[in-house]
Image (cartoon, rainbow, N blue to C red; front, side):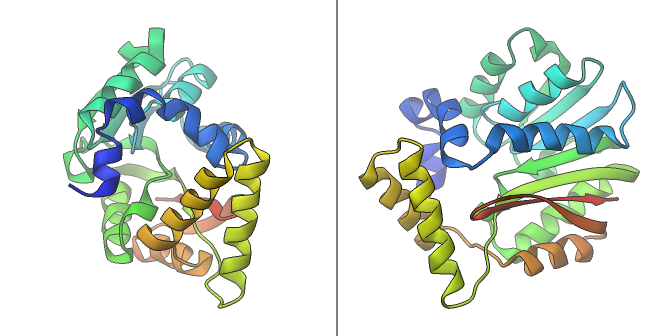
Length: 227
């Protein structure tokens, strides 16, 4: 089991998970609101939305509260995180079908929109391309796909600067200095961060059109693209 898999299976880490993204991801809650708006531009009032990496349920809850007529299929490899998603959803839980697994375990759809937030930086470029292709295959024509994850310039001087800024953001958000430093080390040593141009190219290669940057939070970026 990898360190990432262990983290998402550890009961104590899972119990505290919902506290993490708002503290560790700049503008996290605003990013969720923007994602819902972007999906809604092309989704009907009774939309079916695919959420890959749905563990914890934060995006499911945000989307469900913003659009009362939407229903969801959420996919995540961690049973513990899916259990937390059910709790996070509360009264909206009946509107979400949760599936343990990966993109290949997702329903075929077709869906009116899809998201993959804070997930793709855990896999390499080839797997990102495959995942994006599988998501596109499950979408209705012209449906929106919203994706966000770690993405930063890969220049010799640029990337260290952005990682330092991210570490400073964590400290300013109240994260203990040792944990802020550990977060930077984890990002640097255990995740495959691509440059923004590479991330956009992957979306195009997967068959999406018009990938457009809508969110930047230091080392995080988000795009909307269309099936």
